[in-house]
Length: 170
Image (tube, rainbow, N blue to C red; front, top):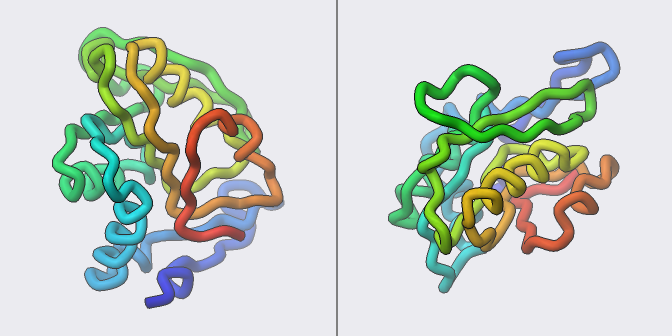
């Protein structure tokens, strides 16, 4: 199955110069969605994963499905003031601005084997911030895992010390 055909381009969202990769058609198709989870999980064959960390917000969709497939816990990483318990935070730059992310302080235990998942690897700022949060809590990053990678933005360089898997590359 070609999952790429379920991702549509939206020109000018959220800013005029951005070509946005919309995954909602992929989410809407149960067979394509299941195939996507298989592809993402297959890259981890033989690896033990304790926690899947999903970055807000589109990293939640396949992140929680991967956690279920891998029999692992799921950890949401959110924008500031969205999590109700004690948090740690990390700031980052992205292709159209700056932001920060937060994670609960008890989400990762020392030595947990962690899969980081997000929908897109673009400039690498989000992924790098999530890696920082996981390592500050003592987690071991097994892989950074993405539905798609925008290779022309060179985000891979910011997280090159970790194993990286992208199901699709643009």
